[in-house]
Image 1 (spheres, rainbow, N blue to C red):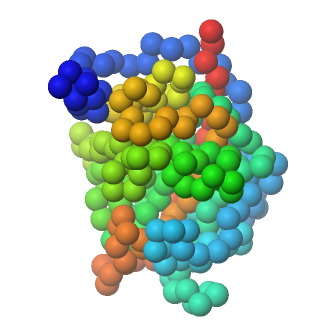
Image 2 (cartoon, one colour):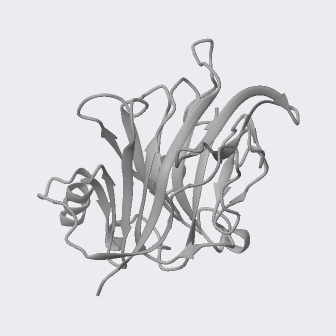
Amino acid sequence: MLRTLLFACLVTLGCGAGPSDLEWRLVWEDEFEGPADQLPDASNWGFDIGTDWGNAQLEFDTDRASNASLDGDGHLRIVARREAFQGREYTSARMTTEGKRTFREGKFEARIKLPTGQGIWPAFWMLGTDLPTVGWPQSGEIDIMEYRGQEPSIVHGSLHGPGYSGGNALTRRYTLPAGRFDDGFHVFTVEWTANEIRWYVDGELYHEIKPEFATGQWVFNKPFYLILNVAVGGGFVGAPNASTTFPQTMLVDWVRVYEQVR
């Protein structure tokens, strides 16, 4: 009973949890500076090219500048389009630091303006580098931010691992006190240490999980890589409908990674 109450306390933040009390040092960043239509820095980002990554997504993800490029004003734009391509009706991009930048623990944050619309599914997240050998969810997944375009004032922070994945993920939603996530930029953050993982929106803590309260094996003690993408359709959001307009753009102002000062 005590374990259940403590877990509920962590998930609902009913125990008086406050802002971060940790000290951090910047170790990597991408400010997305460069001329308009240029691809993002290849030393930082690669592309997953293909379709349906296990979530019944409808888009074909490309490495074309029309789907992922700099805007010339210091932003990355990931653009979902309605267009016939490789047997799909939509295109978008899924950018990843796999094989280029990997991290084990730290503070991870991005300043993002989100798109909107039924069936639009942007995310800023992480996967374990051992995914090709152990598979998912054994690899672990940290969803720093994911968002259903039909709910423009709500984002979700989730943890997936063996015993707590998919519909059983350790997750919590955050609702903006006012406005919508497509109206302007917001900062989405995860602080990941050996003892806990915490989620923030604009500096406000709304979710945290400790290893002892995971409902299965804790697999967050190894390197992970970052992903930025905009999916179209999939089980989490459903398909676009007549109300969904295209193109839809996720604008990323910057991504930053910090290590804990000990």
